[in-house]
Length: 629
Image (cartoon, rainbow, N blue to C red; front, side):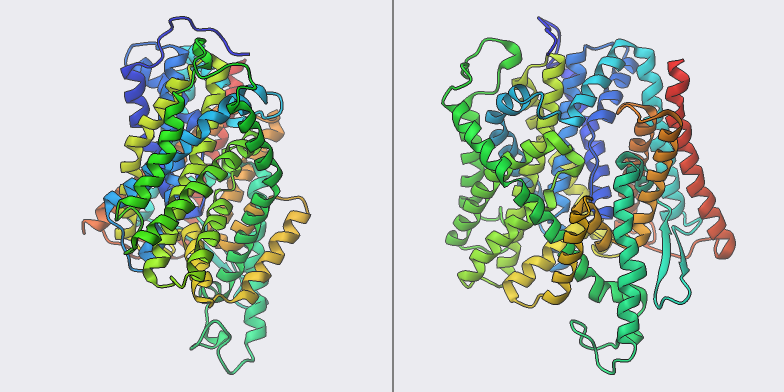
Protein backbone atom coordinates (compact mmCIF):
# COMPACT_ATOMS: atom_id res chain seq x y z
CA UNK A 1 0.00 0.00 0.00
CA UNK A 2 2.87 2.35 0.73
CA UNK A 3 5.23 3.66 -1.90
CA UNK A 4 8.91 2.77 -1.94
CA UNK A 5 11.47 5.50 -1.49
CA UNK A 6 14.98 4.07 -1.59
CA UNK A 7 17.44 6.83 -0.73
CA UNK A 8 14.98 9.72 -1.10
CA UNK A 9 15.73 12.59 1.32
CA UNK A 10 13.53 12.51 4.41
CA UNK A 11 14.98 13.60 7.78
CA UNK A 12 16.71 16.80 6.68
CA UNK A 13 17.54 20.01 8.52
CA UNK A 14 15.17 22.12 6.41
CA UNK A 15 12.29 19.70 7.03
CA UNK A 16 12.85 19.77 10.79
CA UNK A 17 13.32 23.55 11.02
CA UNK A 18 10.24 24.34 8.90
CA UNK A 19 8.23 21.86 10.99
CA UNK A 20 9.37 23.44 14.25
CA UNK A 21 8.43 26.95 13.10
CA UNK A 22 5.01 25.88 11.82
CA UNK A 23 4.46 23.88 15.03
CA UNK A 24 5.06 26.95 17.16
CA UNK A 25 2.59 28.94 15.03
CA UNK A 26 -0.17 26.32 15.13
CA UNK A 27 0.53 25.48 18.78
CA UNK A 28 -0.06 29.08 19.89
CA UNK A 29 -3.12 29.40 17.64
CA UNK A 30 -4.65 26.15 18.89
CA UNK A 31 -4.02 27.07 22.52
CA UNK A 32 -5.88 30.33 21.97
CA UNK A 33 -8.72 28.58 20.12
CA UNK A 34 -9.06 25.91 22.79
CA UNK A 35 -9.28 28.50 25.55
CA UNK A 36 -11.98 30.29 23.58
CA UNK A 37 -14.22 27.41 22.57
CA UNK A 38 -12.93 24.21 24.23
CA UNK A 39 -11.74 22.44 21.07
CA UNK A 40 -8.73 22.46 18.77
CA UNK A 41 -8.27 21.63 15.08
CA UNK A 42 -5.75 19.31 13.45
CA UNK A 43 -2.72 21.10 12.01
CA UNK A 44 -1.58 18.25 9.74
CA UNK A 45 -3.20 19.29 6.45
CA UNK A 46 -2.50 23.05 6.62
CA UNK A 47 1.03 22.30 7.84
CA UNK A 48 1.58 19.93 4.89
CA UNK A 49 0.46 22.54 2.37
CA UNK A 50 2.42 25.34 4.02
CA UNK A 51 5.53 23.14 4.14
CA UNK A 52 5.48 22.64 0.38
CA UNK A 53 4.89 26.37 -0.11
CA UNK A 54 7.84 27.26 2.16
CA UNK A 55 10.05 24.78 0.33
CA UNK A 56 9.06 26.51 -2.90
CA UNK A 57 9.87 29.95 -1.46
CA UNK A 58 13.27 28.62 -0.44
CA UNK A 59 13.75 27.58 -4.08
CA UNK A 60 14.16 23.95 -3.09
CA UNK A 61 11.46 21.58 -4.25
CA UNK A 62 11.78 19.02 -1.45
CA UNK A 63 10.64 15.40 -1.54
CA UNK A 64 7.31 14.05 -0.39
CA UNK A 65 9.06 12.37 2.54
CA UNK A 66 10.63 15.67 3.63
CA UNK A 67 7.23 17.36 3.45
CA UNK A 68 5.68 14.53 5.44
CA UNK A 69 8.41 14.71 8.09
CA UNK A 70 7.93 18.47 8.35
CA UNK A 71 4.16 18.25 8.86
CA UNK A 72 4.74 15.48 11.42
CA UNK A 73 7.00 17.79 13.43
CA UNK A 74 4.54 20.69 13.03
CA UNK A 75 1.42 18.75 14.03
CA UNK A 76 3.03 17.69 17.32
CA UNK A 77 1.95 21.01 18.83
CA UNK A 78 -1.81 20.40 18.55
CA UNK A 79 -1.89 17.61 21.14
CA UNK A 80 0.19 19.63 23.61
CA UNK A 81 -2.23 22.55 23.30
CA UNK A 82 -5.25 20.28 23.80
CA UNK A 83 -4.06 18.67 27.02
CA UNK A 84 -2.69 21.88 28.50
CA UNK A 85 -5.68 24.16 27.92
CA UNK A 86 -8.06 21.51 29.30
CA UNK A 87 -6.47 21.71 32.76
CA UNK A 88 -3.88 24.40 33.54
CA UNK A 89 -6.31 27.39 33.58
CA UNK A 90 -8.04 25.79 36.58
CA UNK A 91 -4.92 26.55 38.63
CA UNK A 92 -5.40 30.24 37.80
CA UNK A 93 -9.02 30.00 38.92
CA UNK A 94 -7.80 28.62 42.27
CA UNK A 95 -5.27 31.43 42.61
CA UNK A 96 -2.33 29.02 42.18
CA UNK A 97 -0.61 30.40 39.10
CA UNK A 98 1.88 27.71 37.95
CA UNK A 99 5.50 28.51 37.11
CA UNK A 100 6.33 28.55 33.40
CA UNK A 101 8.81 25.67 33.69
CA UNK A 102 6.22 23.50 35.45
CA UNK A 103 3.72 23.86 32.58
CA UNK A 104 6.48 23.13 30.05
CA UNK A 105 7.49 20.00 31.99
CA UNK A 106 3.94 18.68 32.30
CA UNK A 107 3.31 19.13 28.56
CA UNK A 108 6.60 17.50 27.56
CA UNK A 109 6.18 14.54 29.93
CA UNK A 110 2.72 13.92 28.47
CA UNK A 111 4.17 14.03 24.96
CA UNK A 112 6.93 11.51 25.81
CA UNK A 113 4.39 9.18 27.43
CA UNK A 114 2.02 9.39 24.44
CA UNK A 115 4.74 8.74 21.86
CA UNK A 116 6.43 5.92 23.79
CA UNK A 117 3.21 4.06 24.57
CA UNK A 118 1.99 4.40 20.96
CA UNK A 119 5.09 2.83 19.35
CA UNK A 120 4.13 -0.84 19.96
CA UNK A 121 0.66 -0.16 18.57
CA UNK A 122 1.82 1.05 15.14
CA UNK A 123 1.99 -2.24 13.22
CA UNK A 124 -1.22 -3.49 14.80
CA UNK A 125 -3.36 -0.39 14.23
CA UNK A 126 -1.79 1.40 11.27
CA UNK A 127 -0.70 -1.53 9.08
CA UNK A 128 -2.67 -4.65 10.00
CA UNK A 129 -5.98 -2.86 10.61
CA UNK A 130 -5.70 -0.67 7.51
CA UNK A 131 -9.08 -1.69 6.10
CA UNK A 132 -10.80 -1.40 9.48
CA UNK A 133 -9.26 1.88 10.69
CA UNK A 134 -9.14 4.58 7.97
CA UNK A 135 -7.55 7.31 10.15
CA UNK A 136 -9.36 10.07 8.20
CA UNK A 137 -6.96 13.00 8.77
CA UNK A 138 -3.93 10.80 8.10
CA UNK A 139 -5.34 9.44 4.85
CA UNK A 140 -6.44 12.89 3.69
CA UNK A 141 -3.03 14.36 4.52
CA UNK A 142 -1.34 11.70 2.38
CA UNK A 143 -3.53 12.71 -0.57
CA UNK A 144 -2.74 16.37 0.01
CA UNK A 145 1.00 15.65 0.08
CA UNK A 146 0.82 13.66 -3.16
CA UNK A 147 -1.13 16.41 -4.89
CA UNK A 148 0.92 19.37 -3.69
CA UNK A 149 4.37 17.81 -4.08
CA UNK A 150 3.45 16.56 -7.54
CA UNK A 151 2.52 20.06 -8.75
CA UNK A 152 4.35 22.97 -7.15
CA UNK A 153 2.08 25.53 -8.82
CA UNK A 154 -0.95 23.83 -7.30
CA UNK A 155 0.74 23.93 -3.92
CA UNK A 156 1.32 27.66 -4.23
CA UNK A 157 -2.31 28.24 -5.21
CA UNK A 158 -3.65 26.09 -2.36
CA UNK A 159 -1.32 27.53 0.29
CA UNK A 160 -2.27 31.06 -0.79
CA UNK A 161 -5.68 30.50 0.80
CA UNK A 162 -4.10 29.67 4.16
CA UNK A 163 -2.12 32.90 4.13
CA UNK A 164 -5.15 34.90 2.98
CA UNK A 165 -7.18 33.35 5.78
CA UNK A 166 -4.49 34.25 8.30
CA UNK A 167 -4.55 37.86 7.07
CA UNK A 168 -8.36 38.09 7.26
CA UNK A 169 -8.54 36.44 10.71
CA UNK A 170 -5.80 38.65 12.14
CA UNK A 171 -7.24 41.85 10.66
CA UNK A 172 -10.72 41.24 12.10
CA UNK A 173 -9.34 40.26 15.51
CA UNK A 174 -7.15 43.37 15.69
CA UNK A 175 -10.01 45.62 14.56
CA UNK A 176 -12.27 44.29 17.31
CA UNK A 177 -9.92 43.57 20.23
CA UNK A 178 -7.03 46.02 19.78
CA UNK A 179 -8.40 49.07 17.97
CA UNK A 180 -12.02 48.59 19.18
CA UNK A 181 -13.43 49.80 15.88
CA UNK A 182 -16.70 47.84 16.13
CA UNK A 183 -18.48 45.55 18.59
CA UNK A 184 -17.35 41.93 18.75
CA UNK A 185 -20.77 40.53 19.62
CA UNK A 186 -24.38 41.02 18.55
CA UNK A 187 -27.24 40.44 21.01
CA UNK A 188 -31.00 40.73 20.85
CA UNK A 189 -33.55 39.86 23.53
CA UNK A 190 -36.24 37.35 22.61
CA UNK A 191 -39.74 38.62 23.44
CA UNK A 192 -42.05 36.66 25.76
CA UNK A 193 -39.30 34.32 27.02
CA UNK A 194 -37.77 35.80 30.21
CA UNK A 195 -33.96 36.34 30.10
CA UNK A 196 -33.77 34.71 26.66
CA UNK A 197 -31.27 36.19 24.21
CA UNK A 198 -30.00 35.45 20.73
CA UNK A 199 -26.31 36.24 20.38
CA UNK A 200 -23.58 36.00 17.75
CA UNK A 201 -19.86 36.61 18.24
CA UNK A 202 -17.95 38.05 15.27
CA UNK A 203 -15.07 35.58 15.40
CA UNK A 204 -13.26 34.44 12.22
CA UNK A 205 -11.69 31.49 14.03
CA UNK A 206 -15.05 30.15 15.17
CA UNK A 207 -16.59 30.55 11.73
CA UNK A 208 -13.57 28.71 10.32
CA UNK A 209 -13.93 25.91 12.86
CA UNK A 210 -17.60 25.57 11.94
CA UNK A 211 -16.65 25.23 8.27
CA UNK A 212 -14.09 22.55 9.14
CA UNK A 213 -16.56 20.63 11.32
CA UNK A 214 -19.30 20.77 8.70
CA UNK A 215 -23.01 21.46 8.93
CA UNK A 216 -24.13 18.46 11.00
CA UNK A 217 -21.52 18.72 13.74
CA UNK A 218 -21.86 22.50 14.06
CA UNK A 219 -25.66 22.16 14.09
CA UNK A 220 -25.45 19.69 16.99
CA UNK A 221 -23.24 22.16 18.90
CA UNK A 222 -25.58 25.09 18.38
CA UNK A 223 -28.59 22.91 19.26
CA UNK A 224 -27.19 22.43 22.75
CA UNK A 225 -26.58 26.18 23.07
CA UNK A 226 -30.11 26.99 21.90
CA UNK A 227 -31.54 24.69 24.55
CA UNK A 228 -29.48 26.50 27.19
CA UNK A 229 -30.32 30.02 25.97
CA UNK A 230 -33.93 29.60 24.88
CA UNK A 231 -35.20 26.81 27.14
CA UNK A 232 -33.20 26.26 30.35
CA UNK A 233 -32.39 29.91 31.12
CA UNK A 234 -35.98 31.18 30.57
CA UNK A 235 -37.36 28.23 32.54
CA UNK A 236 -35.15 29.00 35.54
CA UNK A 237 -36.05 32.71 35.27
CA UNK A 238 -39.76 31.90 35.09
CA UNK A 239 -39.77 29.35 37.93
CA UNK A 240 -37.56 31.51 40.15
CA UNK A 241 -39.41 34.79 39.60
CA UNK A 242 -41.83 34.08 42.46
CA UNK A 243 -39.22 32.87 44.95
CA UNK A 244 -38.47 35.16 47.90
CA UNK A 245 -35.23 33.37 48.82
CA UNK A 246 -32.05 32.52 46.87
CA UNK A 247 -32.21 29.30 44.88
CA UNK A 248 -29.35 26.88 45.62
CA UNK A 249 -26.44 26.95 44.78
CA UNK A 250 -26.79 30.76 44.84
CA UNK A 251 -26.73 32.02 48.43
CA UNK A 252 -27.34 35.76 48.25
CA UNK A 253 -29.25 36.94 45.16
CA UNK A 254 -32.80 36.18 44.09
CA UNK A 255 -33.36 34.67 40.66
CA UNK A 256 -35.54 37.68 39.79
CA UNK A 257 -32.50 39.93 40.30
CA UNK A 258 -30.24 37.96 37.94
CA UNK A 259 -29.42 38.70 34.32
CA UNK A 260 -29.21 35.98 31.67
CA UNK A 261 -25.45 35.81 32.23
CA UNK A 262 -25.90 35.43 35.99
CA UNK A 263 -28.35 32.56 35.52
CA UNK A 264 -25.92 30.86 33.16
CA UNK A 265 -23.05 31.25 35.64
CA UNK A 266 -24.93 30.04 38.73
CA UNK A 267 -27.15 27.31 37.24
CA UNK A 268 -26.77 26.50 33.56
CA UNK A 269 -22.99 26.09 33.90
CA UNK A 270 -23.50 23.11 36.24
CA UNK A 271 -26.07 21.58 33.91
CA UNK A 272 -23.60 21.93 31.05
CA UNK A 273 -20.81 20.45 33.19
CA UNK A 274 -22.96 17.41 33.90
CA UNK A 275 -23.73 17.05 30.20
CA UNK A 276 -20.06 17.21 29.18
CA UNK A 277 -18.95 14.87 31.97
CA UNK A 278 -21.65 12.31 31.17
CA UNK A 279 -21.03 12.40 27.42
CA UNK A 280 -17.27 12.13 27.92
CA UNK A 281 -17.47 9.23 30.35
CA UNK A 282 -20.00 7.33 28.24
CA UNK A 283 -17.80 7.82 25.18
CA UNK A 284 -14.89 6.27 27.05
CA UNK A 285 -17.05 3.42 28.36
CA UNK A 286 -18.20 2.63 24.83
CA UNK A 287 -14.54 2.29 23.94
CA UNK A 288 -13.85 -0.33 26.63
CA UNK A 289 -14.23 -3.31 24.25
CA UNK A 290 -11.89 -1.54 21.85
CA UNK A 291 -9.46 -0.94 24.68
CA UNK A 292 -9.50 -4.58 25.77
CA UNK A 293 -9.07 -5.82 22.22
CA UNK A 294 -6.21 -3.40 21.60
CA UNK A 295 -4.39 -4.53 24.73
CA UNK A 296 -4.74 -8.18 23.75
CA UNK A 297 -3.48 -7.37 20.27
CA UNK A 298 -0.52 -5.51 21.75
CA UNK A 299 0.29 -8.48 23.97
CA UNK A 300 0.24 -10.80 20.97
CA UNK A 301 2.33 -8.34 18.96
CA UNK A 302 4.92 -8.02 21.72
CA UNK A 303 5.22 -11.80 21.73
CA UNK A 304 6.11 -11.70 18.04
CA UNK A 305 2.86 -12.88 16.56
CA UNK A 306 3.39 -10.55 13.60
CA UNK A 307 6.44 -12.53 12.59
CA UNK A 308 8.72 -9.49 12.50
CA UNK A 309 10.67 -8.05 15.39
CA UNK A 310 12.05 -4.69 16.19
CA UNK A 311 15.17 -5.45 14.21
CA UNK A 312 13.40 -5.64 10.83
CA UNK A 313 15.73 -4.14 8.20
CA UNK A 314 12.91 -2.83 6.02
CA UNK A 315 13.07 0.95 6.31
CA UNK A 316 9.32 1.51 6.10
CA UNK A 317 8.70 -0.90 8.99
CA UNK A 318 11.35 0.33 11.41
CA UNK A 319 10.28 1.86 14.73
CA UNK A 320 12.42 3.51 17.38
CA UNK A 321 14.11 0.89 19.64
CA UNK A 322 12.02 -0.98 22.19
CA UNK A 323 14.17 0.50 24.91
CA UNK A 324 12.58 3.89 24.16
CA UNK A 325 9.11 2.41 24.78
CA UNK A 326 9.90 1.11 28.24
CA UNK A 327 12.44 3.81 29.03
CA UNK A 328 10.08 6.60 28.01
CA UNK A 329 7.20 5.37 30.18
CA UNK A 330 9.55 4.72 33.11
CA UNK A 331 11.18 8.15 32.73
CA UNK A 332 7.81 9.93 32.88
CA UNK A 333 6.56 7.99 35.91
CA UNK A 334 9.84 8.23 37.86
CA UNK A 335 10.30 11.92 37.07
CA UNK A 336 6.78 12.65 38.25
CA UNK A 337 7.26 10.60 41.42
CA UNK A 338 10.73 11.70 42.44
CA UNK A 339 11.08 15.31 41.30
CA UNK A 340 9.29 17.84 43.54
CA UNK A 341 7.47 20.55 41.64
CA UNK A 342 6.35 18.46 38.66
CA UNK A 343 2.84 18.24 40.09
CA UNK A 344 1.20 21.44 41.27
CA UNK A 345 0.71 21.92 44.99
CA UNK A 346 2.93 21.01 47.93
CA UNK A 347 2.94 17.21 47.68
CA UNK A 348 4.52 14.73 50.08
CA UNK A 349 6.59 11.84 48.71
CA UNK A 350 3.68 9.42 49.21
CA UNK A 351 1.23 11.74 47.46
CA UNK A 352 3.63 12.19 44.54
CA UNK A 353 3.97 8.41 44.27
CA UNK A 354 0.18 7.97 44.13
CA UNK A 355 -0.14 10.71 41.49
CA UNK A 356 2.71 9.22 39.44
CA UNK A 357 1.05 5.80 39.56
CA UNK A 358 -2.11 7.45 38.25
CA UNK A 359 -0.11 8.94 35.38
CA UNK A 360 1.34 5.54 34.49
CA UNK A 361 -1.88 3.54 34.72
CA UNK A 362 -4.30 6.03 33.16
CA UNK A 363 -1.72 7.26 30.64
CA UNK A 364 -0.90 3.87 29.12
CA UNK A 365 -4.56 2.86 29.30
CA UNK A 366 -5.88 5.88 27.45
CA UNK A 367 -3.07 6.04 24.90
CA UNK A 368 -4.33 2.68 23.68
CA UNK A 369 -7.93 3.90 23.67
CA UNK A 370 -7.12 7.15 21.88
CA UNK A 371 -4.91 5.56 19.21
CA UNK A 372 -7.74 3.16 18.32
CA UNK A 373 -10.64 5.59 18.49
CA UNK A 374 -9.10 8.27 16.27
CA UNK A 375 -8.68 5.64 13.57
CA UNK A 376 -12.46 5.79 13.17
CA UNK A 377 -13.65 9.24 14.24
CA UNK A 378 -10.53 11.35 13.64
CA UNK A 379 -8.62 13.69 15.94
CA UNK A 380 -11.32 16.39 16.08
CA UNK A 381 -13.81 13.96 17.65
CA UNK A 382 -11.31 12.38 20.05
CA UNK A 383 -12.87 12.24 23.56
CA UNK A 384 -9.95 13.94 25.33
CA UNK A 385 -12.24 15.72 27.78
CA UNK A 386 -13.85 12.40 28.76
CA UNK A 387 -10.42 10.82 29.20
CA UNK A 388 -9.32 13.71 31.42
CA UNK A 389 -12.53 13.51 33.44
CA UNK A 390 -12.19 9.78 34.11
CA UNK A 391 -8.56 10.32 35.13
CA UNK A 392 -9.50 13.15 37.49
CA UNK A 393 -12.44 11.27 38.98
CA UNK A 394 -10.32 8.18 39.62
CA UNK A 395 -7.38 10.08 41.13
CA UNK A 396 -9.59 12.46 43.12
CA UNK A 397 -11.54 9.53 44.58
CA UNK A 398 -8.31 7.96 45.86
CA UNK A 399 -7.24 11.27 47.38
CA UNK A 400 -10.65 11.79 48.97
CA UNK A 401 -10.51 8.28 50.45
CA UNK A 402 -7.09 9.05 51.94
CA UNK A 403 -8.35 12.31 53.41
CA UNK A 404 -6.24 14.52 51.13
CA UNK A 405 -8.78 17.19 50.20
CA UNK A 406 -7.03 20.54 50.61
CA UNK A 407 -6.09 23.08 47.92
CA UNK A 408 -2.74 21.38 47.29
CA UNK A 409 -4.50 18.05 46.75
CA UNK A 410 -6.82 19.62 44.16
CA UNK A 411 -3.89 21.07 42.28
CA UNK A 412 -1.96 17.80 42.32
CA UNK A 413 -4.93 15.81 41.00
CA UNK A 414 -5.49 18.36 38.24
CA UNK A 415 -1.92 18.09 36.92
CA UNK A 416 -2.22 14.31 36.66
CA UNK A 417 -5.00 15.11 34.21
CA UNK A 418 -2.64 17.42 32.30
CA UNK A 419 -0.07 14.69 31.62
CA UNK A 420 -2.67 12.03 30.76
CA UNK A 421 -4.70 14.38 28.51
CA UNK A 422 -1.56 15.39 26.60
CA UNK A 423 -0.48 11.73 26.29
CA UNK A 424 -3.86 10.58 24.97
CA UNK A 425 -4.09 13.51 22.57
CA UNK A 426 -0.50 12.89 21.45
CA UNK A 427 -1.29 9.23 20.73
CA UNK A 428 -4.17 10.25 18.47
CA UNK A 429 -2.04 12.82 16.69
CA UNK A 430 0.97 10.57 16.04
CA UNK A 431 -1.36 7.79 14.88
CA UNK A 432 -2.67 10.01 12.08
CA UNK A 433 0.88 11.02 11.14
CA UNK A 434 2.07 7.42 11.07
CA UNK A 435 -0.86 6.56 8.81
CA UNK A 436 0.16 9.34 6.45
CA UNK A 437 3.73 8.09 6.55
CA UNK A 438 2.72 4.50 5.82
CA UNK A 439 0.74 5.62 2.80
CA UNK A 440 3.59 7.69 1.32
CA UNK A 441 6.43 5.32 2.24
CA UNK A 442 7.99 7.17 5.19
CA UNK A 443 10.22 5.75 7.92
CA UNK A 444 8.21 5.32 11.17
CA UNK A 445 11.27 5.71 13.41
CA UNK A 446 12.07 9.08 11.83
CA UNK A 447 8.48 10.25 12.23
CA UNK A 448 8.49 9.19 15.88
CA UNK A 449 11.73 11.11 16.44
CA UNK A 450 10.26 14.08 14.55
CA UNK A 451 7.22 14.10 16.84
CA UNK A 452 9.52 14.11 19.86
CA UNK A 453 11.52 17.04 18.46
CA UNK A 454 8.33 18.94 17.60
CA UNK A 455 6.98 18.41 21.12
CA UNK A 456 10.29 19.51 22.67
CA UNK A 457 9.97 22.92 20.98
CA UNK A 458 6.17 23.34 20.95
CA UNK A 459 5.82 22.78 24.71
CA UNK A 460 7.55 26.12 25.33
CA UNK A 461 5.26 28.01 22.94
CA UNK A 462 2.06 26.40 24.21
CA UNK A 463 2.97 27.01 27.87
CA UNK A 464 3.89 30.62 27.11
CA UNK A 465 0.57 31.18 25.31
CA UNK A 466 -1.52 29.79 28.17
CA UNK A 467 0.33 31.78 30.83
CA UNK A 468 0.26 34.96 28.73
CA UNK A 469 -3.49 34.75 28.20
CA UNK A 470 -3.97 33.93 31.89
CA UNK A 471 -2.07 37.04 32.96
CA UNK A 472 -3.68 39.31 30.36
CA UNK A 473 -7.26 38.22 30.95
CA UNK A 474 -9.21 36.27 33.54
CA UNK A 475 -9.86 32.63 32.70
CA UNK A 476 -13.58 31.97 32.82
CA UNK A 477 -14.33 35.50 31.53
CA UNK A 478 -16.13 36.18 28.23
CA UNK A 479 -12.78 36.96 26.55
CA UNK A 480 -11.19 33.62 27.54
CA UNK A 481 -13.87 31.24 28.88
CA UNK A 482 -11.48 28.23 29.17
CA UNK A 483 -14.56 25.95 29.24
CA UNK A 484 -12.88 22.58 29.64
CA UNK A 485 -10.58 23.74 32.44
CA UNK A 486 -13.53 25.33 34.25
CA UNK A 487 -15.33 21.99 33.98
CA UNK A 488 -12.33 20.08 35.40
CA UNK A 489 -12.15 22.55 38.30
CA UNK A 490 -15.83 22.05 39.05
CA UNK A 491 -15.54 18.25 39.03
CA UNK A 492 -12.45 18.12 41.26
CA UNK A 493 -13.97 20.52 43.78
CA UNK A 494 -17.18 18.53 43.84
CA UNK A 495 -15.47 15.17 44.43
CA UNK A 496 -13.08 16.45 47.12
CA UNK A 497 -15.55 18.67 48.97
CA UNK A 498 -18.86 16.93 48.35
CA UNK A 499 -20.42 20.32 47.55
CA UNK A 500 -21.36 19.73 43.92
CA UNK A 501 -25.01 20.64 43.08
CA UNK A 502 -25.80 17.12 41.93
CA UNK A 503 -29.38 17.93 40.94
CA UNK A 504 -28.16 20.34 38.26
CA UNK A 505 -25.26 18.10 37.22
CA UNK A 506 -27.50 15.06 36.81
CA UNK A 507 -30.00 17.15 34.84
CA UNK A 508 -27.22 17.85 32.36
CA UNK A 509 -26.38 14.16 32.31
CA UNK A 510 -29.95 13.39 31.31
CA UNK A 511 -29.74 15.88 28.43
CA UNK A 512 -26.53 14.29 27.16
CA UNK A 513 -27.98 10.77 27.34
CA UNK A 514 -31.07 11.91 25.44
CA UNK A 515 -28.92 13.45 22.72
CA UNK A 516 -26.79 10.30 22.39
CA UNK A 517 -29.92 8.13 22.14
CA UNK A 518 -30.99 10.33 19.22
CA UNK A 519 -27.81 9.33 17.44
CA UNK A 520 -25.93 12.64 17.62
CA UNK A 521 -22.53 13.32 19.13
CA UNK A 522 -23.05 13.57 22.87
CA UNK A 523 -19.88 15.59 23.39
CA UNK A 524 -20.68 18.10 20.65
CA UNK A 525 -24.19 18.61 22.03
CA UNK A 526 -22.93 18.84 25.62
CA UNK A 527 -20.29 21.43 24.71
CA UNK A 528 -23.11 23.46 23.17
CA UNK A 529 -25.10 23.26 26.42
CA UNK A 530 -22.01 24.27 28.38
CA UNK A 531 -20.90 27.25 26.25
CA UNK A 532 -22.84 30.46 25.55
CA UNK A 533 -24.91 30.74 22.40
CA UNK A 534 -22.75 33.66 21.25
CA UNK A 535 -19.79 31.27 21.00
CA UNK A 536 -21.65 28.43 19.30
CA UNK A 537 -23.57 30.55 16.78
CA UNK A 538 -20.53 31.41 14.60
CA UNK A 539 -19.70 27.69 14.43
CA UNK A 540 -23.13 27.12 12.95
CA UNK A 541 -22.63 30.00 10.50
CA UNK A 542 -19.44 28.33 9.27
CA UNK A 543 -21.24 25.01 9.00
CA UNK A 544 -23.97 26.63 6.92
CA UNK A 545 -21.37 28.05 4.54
CA UNK A 546 -19.94 24.55 4.17
CA UNK A 547 -23.41 23.14 3.45
CA UNK A 548 -23.95 25.82 0.81
CA UNK A 549 -20.65 24.91 -0.86
CA UNK A 550 -21.38 21.17 -0.82
CA UNK A 551 -24.86 21.67 -2.21
CA UNK A 552 -23.24 23.22 -5.27
CA UNK A 553 -20.47 20.68 -5.86
CA UNK A 554 -20.87 17.74 -3.47
CA UNK A 555 -18.66 16.78 -0.51
CA UNK A 556 -15.23 18.33 -0.73
CA UNK A 557 -11.82 16.71 -0.61
CA UNK A 558 -9.92 17.32 2.63
CA UNK A 559 -7.31 19.51 0.95
CA UNK A 560 -9.54 21.96 -0.89
CA UNK A 561 -8.87 25.69 -0.51
CA UNK A 562 -12.05 26.19 1.55
CA UNK A 563 -10.69 24.02 4.36
CA UNK A 564 -7.29 25.68 4.02
CA UNK A 565 -8.86 29.15 4.12
CA UNK A 566 -10.79 28.15 7.27
CA UNK A 567 -7.56 26.87 8.84
CA UNK A 568 -5.98 30.21 8.01
CA UNK A 569 -8.80 32.05 9.79
CA UNK A 570 -8.16 29.95 12.90
CA UNK A 571 -4.40 30.54 12.81
CA UNK A 572 -4.73 34.26 12.01
CA UNK A 573 -7.17 35.09 14.80
CA UNK A 574 -5.24 32.86 17.21
CA UNK A 575 -1.90 34.55 16.57
CA UNK A 576 -3.49 38.02 16.66
CA UNK A 577 -5.24 37.12 19.91
CA UNK A 578 -1.93 36.06 21.47
CA UNK A 579 -0.31 39.31 20.26
CA UNK A 580 -3.13 41.39 21.75
CA UNK A 581 -2.83 39.50 25.05
CA UNK A 582 0.88 40.29 25.11
CA UNK A 583 0.16 43.99 24.64
CA UNK A 584 -2.51 43.92 27.35
CA UNK A 585 -0.19 42.12 29.78
CA UNK A 586 2.55 44.67 29.07
CA UNK A 587 0.15 47.54 29.70
CA UNK A 588 0.40 48.76 26.11
CA UNK A 589 -3.25 48.11 25.24
CA UNK A 590 -6.50 48.33 27.23
CA UNK A 591 -8.17 45.09 28.28
CA UNK A 592 -11.58 46.35 27.18
CA UNK A 593 -13.29 49.55 26.07
CA UNK A 594 -16.38 50.68 24.24
CA UNK A 595 -16.18 50.29 20.42
CA UNK A 596 -15.61 53.49 18.48
CA UNK A 597 -18.52 52.64 16.18
CA UNK A 598 -21.40 51.87 18.50
CA UNK A 599 -25.15 51.62 18.38
CA UNK A 600 -27.05 50.43 15.34
CA UNK A 601 -24.26 51.53 12.97
CA UNK A 602 -21.72 49.43 14.87
CA UNK A 603 -23.98 46.39 14.88
CA UNK A 604 -24.58 46.77 11.13
CA UNK A 605 -20.83 47.06 10.51
CA UNK A 606 -20.15 43.96 12.64
CA UNK A 607 -22.79 42.03 10.73
CA UNK A 608 -21.23 43.08 7.42
CA UNK A 609 -17.84 41.89 8.64
CA UNK A 610 -19.35 38.51 9.51
CA UNK A 611 -20.92 38.26 6.06
CA UNK A 612 -17.59 39.23 4.47
CA UNK A 613 -15.87 36.35 6.28
CA UNK A 614 -18.51 33.96 4.94
CA UNK A 615 -18.02 35.36 1.44
CA UNK A 616 -14.26 34.82 1.79
CA UNK A 617 -14.81 31.15 2.67
CA UNK A 618 -17.21 30.72 -0.25
CA UNK A 619 -14.69 32.24 -2.62
CA UNK A 620 -11.94 29.98 -1.30
CA UNK A 621 -14.05 26.84 -1.54
CA UNK A 622 -15.10 27.57 -5.12
CA UNK A 623 -11.50 28.18 -6.18
CA UNK A 624 -11.04 24.40 -6.32
CA UNK A 625 -13.63 24.07 -9.01
CA UNK A 626 -11.96 26.81 -11.03
CA UNK A 627 -8.55 25.16 -10.75
CA UNK A 628 -9.73 21.73 -11.69
CA UNK A 629 -11.25 22.76 -15.04
